[in-house]
Each structure stands twice: as C-alpha cells, then as structure tokens.
Image (cartoon, rainbow, N blue to C red; front, side):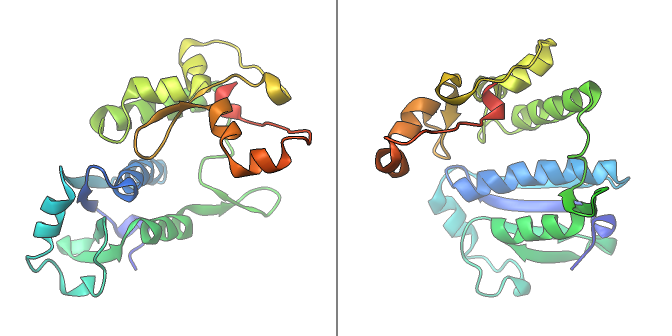
Amino acid sequence: MLSVQQVSSLVVVGYSSCPFFRKAVTEAHLIKHRAKEKGTEIELDITEFETKAEFENMKQVPIDDNVGNHTTCPFIWLVGPQDTKTFIGGYDDLKRWTDGNFQTENQNGKSKFLGYGESSDEEMMKRVNVCLDMFAKNPSVLKPEEFLDAHPIAKKILNGEPLSVFPGSSAPNGTLYTLERKRINLHDMLKSSPLFRKYSSAPMLLNFGSFT
C-alpha cells in the first residue's frame, strides 16, 4: 500500500445519501490537511452521484481489476507515482489506511493522531477554518452554518469567545445532525436512548466538549 508521501491524489466515488460516502469525503479532507502538515500535497478527486441508482449504473462499467468483490459505496483509490491507481476499498479501509499513516508517538510513548497534541489558539483557529472550508466545498455532507450550529465550541473559537465547562445535566441542549442530516438536540437524543431508559435512576455524567 502507498505511503502518504507517495500519494498525489485521493479518489472517492459514491452517492449523496450514503452516510459512508459522506464520512469518506470528510476523512479525505482531513487526510489532505494532515498530509500538508507533513509536507505532502494531496489533491482530492470526488465524484458524487445524486442517487444510488446512478452509482449502481456506474458499477456496470468495468472500473478496475483490483476492485475484486467490493460492491458497496464508496469506492476509494489512491493515486501514486506515474498516475498509478491503488484501490483501497470503502470507508473503513480508508480509515485503517489513515490510522496506519498518521499515527505518531507522543511524549508519553502513547500513540496519537498527528497534530492533536496542539491546542494553541492559532492551531485551534486553523482547524476550525479547515472544517469550514471543507464543508463549504462539500455542502452535501454538512453546510458550514450547520457545522457551527452543531459545534458551538468552534463558533466560540471563531468569534474569540472564552470557552466554558458545564457539569452534568446543566450541559447545553446542543444541536446534533444525524448521518441522514436530521436536526435533533442533545437532551432528546439522550432521553430516547435505551441506555438512558435503563439507567435513568442513576447519576449521569455528561462530557460534551463540542457543546461548551
């Protein structure tokens, strides 16, 4: 399998309503950002079909001998030296490739993702802007305003506001978006959970950094 330094572009093909396609597109943008931090420029080649039927029709045309038995959305390739394409598979396969290529050792010897050890104001602002840029280019995944709606901490960072911590049930009733783009809120989501109904009489600790 190609290393990050060997990859010139990342190809993702899928259809709009597929949650795994949307997750793969998000992961692809994060890979592009992390690769740039390591000195490698990776271009993204994303093909998004409007319907599952269009995606299925695409599969009727011979694509790549290396696809093998992979039939589900999305289809993902790495493009390396001399434009050679290496088929990865789907979202889970892309995530495994990401984990294998961006793990580093922190000062305690524990594995962590590249860049997540940084927490300066400048670094946090950069990450928020990367996310906004990603969603601006791929509104079918999530619109920038929806990202800020569901991620108040990002909005506070963007506006230069101080961050705060809320214990237990005083946690803000923040907005959530499901993989189907349905807008719900945190408290209703928790109350509808079978785990909540099972343990509703027991104390509950909430730790949702994105809502504080």
